[in-house]
View 1 (tube, rainbow, N blue to C red):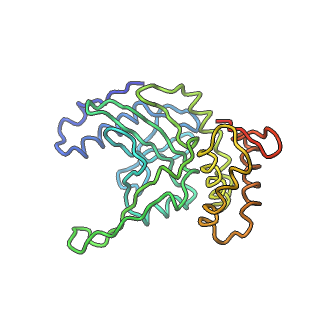
View 2: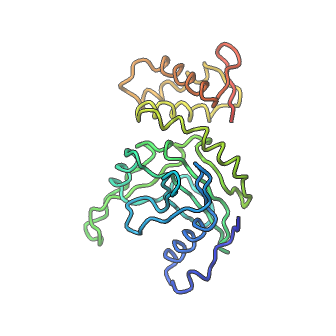
View 3: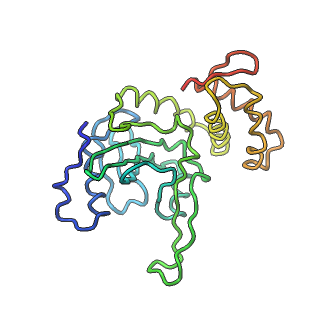
Length: 254
């Protein structure tokens, strides 16, 4: 995998944003691959596709690319709020590639967040543009990566180190069970997963119970929070995300 952008492709562009778009999309087309089926070449959608940039001709996975100079931040600027919410609630919502690059146009990090980790509360609604703006009233959004469990951040390149494809595929495949859940069930699983991320490798049921008030705020309609915690721990255990050690004690498998 070549980590350098082919700068000759953007020599006719003066806008930095246009230049980066051309260079980053060309880099992904040349070096990226489908993390679902490992097909090397990804095809590009037409420029007017609402969200997705690439798709796999073999398994039809879709991918949206976000690029940024320097470090990967927790908050990523995105497009229209309404469009984004509609897409993540649809069956063909895209996976997201996030790419960071240096001032020398070298890839620092390239990761995918699979679509099953996206839920409405990961999308932050921005204030409408002012009445004097060219697109007055337009409402954009941000993506809050803090809402994604660490296992949902699958690196293909990390700190300029290329991750073996088999490791990438294995991490991607391990979380596909989430796609079979309803939106509500998946939300609960991800919320409990995030709580576990904040604990040590070995943790207890009592420690997860300590997040009950926080979970109650997220799910005010549920009057059986502790029962739900136990249920979701069992789901994560059955899927190999955590391991049962002894009564009331668990260990992370990631």
